[in-house]
Length: 441
Image (cartoon, rainbow, N blue to C red; front, side, top):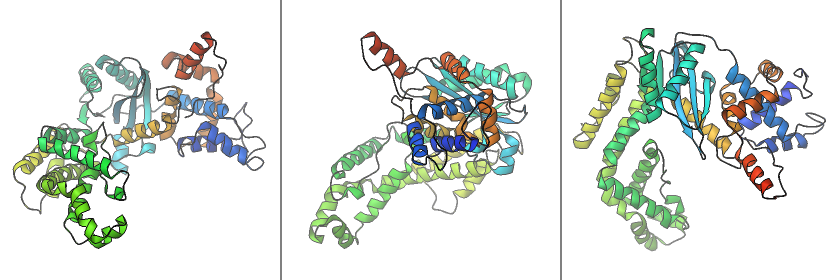
């Protein structure tokens, strides 16, 4: 089997190791143990955890530095992720508009490329604008930039637009998911009935948690991005209202291990409060449906000047909304119309940065395996998550990027890891254990 120059392990084995680490979320030590269990089948002696870690970092740095084609139809997706510690990670993804037109407007991980990955201790609008300019000099000025309008990111995009007016129009649009979630938040958050509903759900979840009726408990409420994830909560409320409507006492009694006579008062005690919210749940469910219909249209067909009309048609064929429902639908259609008006006539642009949110989610799942949740060397995993790891790519990466290159990049961009800082302090204090294991992916 073929090996990269200067390496003893076959490229197939390297590919397996990195695939297990990135796609199966297996720790470096876990991958090493898999190879150890296959000793004599895959290789005489498998790689250790530190070797696998260095492969990943070298390939990640290679992908970050490799030359990319200059294009005039790039769409940039920009976001900033924050974990523990002082570091933030600014990521700029790119996808050609021509590719979206061919394959659809919901790109997956392998449809995009990591154009920039910056680990920062301080981020301002000027910082974001500067990195957008650097990327544009390298691959070309984008036709569109999509973001969630986070404060520093949005300020940076607007500054970048002003600096590049001579290049023609650079369209800046909301990620539709975040934009509509903000409308939903503005509608629900000031409503005292919504606040009391949320509180009652949380109380009910605690009451049912350790009981035979735990299967009826409401979903946990997220502390962040709550209005991006209302669908499950409203589905639960509607399902429980059906249960409260009657006709399931016998079945429910069997599941609870109670008699039917005991089940009805138990159900009323635990979930009867929902009857008082039946009207509101119907209204809130309609608001959520409007959001989902708008998202579905834009993620399927892209964002255009006619998107709002298509969403309006999707919402027809039902009883006419009144009051809050009608006003919220008007707000959603107006928002989509405003965003669509930025797109050139008879064109479709990207309307969602879901692929970037998904990528950050996958990275955070991998980072959760680390001893510390701070941003460390594992940020170099991100380029691997969007790239098919072919033998030729791995060969180029391992023959091009040295371990010293990785160490230099980490020193310049990340600094010492939390584990290294701790070892230095313990060594100064006379700690005996100053040798640490490789940090999991």
